[in-house]
Length: 257
Image 1 (tube, helix red, strand yellow):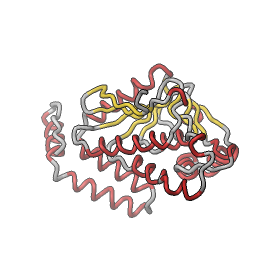
Image 2 (cartoon, rainbow, N blue to C red):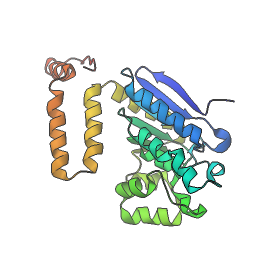
Image 3 (spheres, rainbow, N blue to C red):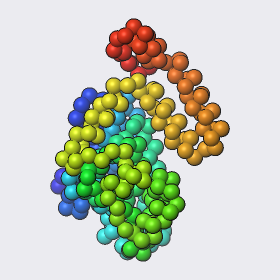
């Protein structure tokens, strides 16, 4: 059997992580979740990795959790599976992660996309948190991340009804970064990853940290974090190289130090 999660390297500094369960519309079983957490953890520690693209196939990014795997589970079993810890590990990747979404991103698939930093969606992509239709609620951040992105009233509509919404509406509510033709989703995600990979990685890392940490902090604390992060970067070789190259009107050569 094929591996349920594949690693591909479309370009130097860029890795593509592909969910590979087409027979189950890329449903997120426990094995896939563990592999995603492991791969993103490893790539997050790899100094040669500058950006990551997370994707599925042309029909499904991930159609949700594997319902067959959890239908008869009890409370203690669900607790011991530690799925919440796997979600945290995925979201904690320090490298920029770009979701390339075609087809369905539902339930856990929508939540997985929301752990990423940028979402590129195909015109036909469909998003949603339909968990209420099977007697549960979103458990991978859907009630929280969607509310922070779209606001209470939009989030309530979709969490309480389980209705799906398309890429254009997702873009309008701020959930999606760009909508592109279906055939160009992966290509556009890799292009953005390459743009990021060419930039100084310390600056990229601290920018991501400042945005994410600042979202949950008071404005004064978030601004202090931003200022300290900026000041720290003035000890990096890449800051000196970047500013010298700008003054000398040449292309910078960033080393990651």
